[in-house]
Image 1: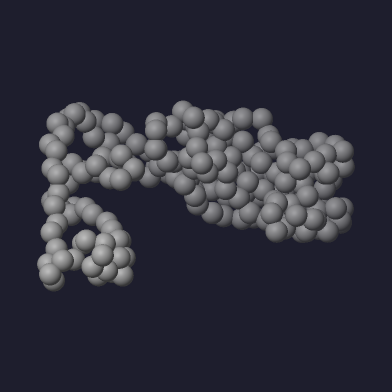
Image 2: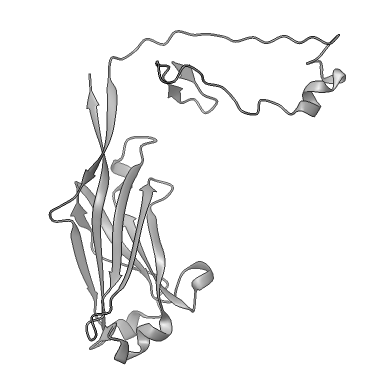
Length: 206
């Protein structure tokens, strides 16, 4: 096993026999004699080796296709009253043993603020993941057109963790959102749907 600079332990095996650093120090620093790395055209390299006792436990990562109860529909009622909010969260829902939320930016997010409606999938219980564990998901997000059936659909895939809880897109222009003939806002409500197609699954074994 190999302990990285950040303290994480990496495992040597027959498919991975080397670990190291792509850039330990720059060539200019190495070749500068006053730094003491290169003296009389020679240098010394060393390594400290510590044997870490194996716990006898391992993990297996697989991608599991979600085929049932893998979608959630959120109707945002009284949309005209919340369209100026910075962000809106749905109630939490469960897909694949994880709790999720839909996150909507009614005025847009980032560079699309004031231009587009932004829709994101949010991992609501990321604190339940073990330390340094990430969760991968492939998903689709829709803003539903309830008049013409021309839904705005976006597909994507992302790794979710404590530092990256949400992933999404700029779904549709605000002009289209507020144009009632487009079918996205009907009776002052907006409907967003998410479907998670694939999720990563980690199993521990001894």
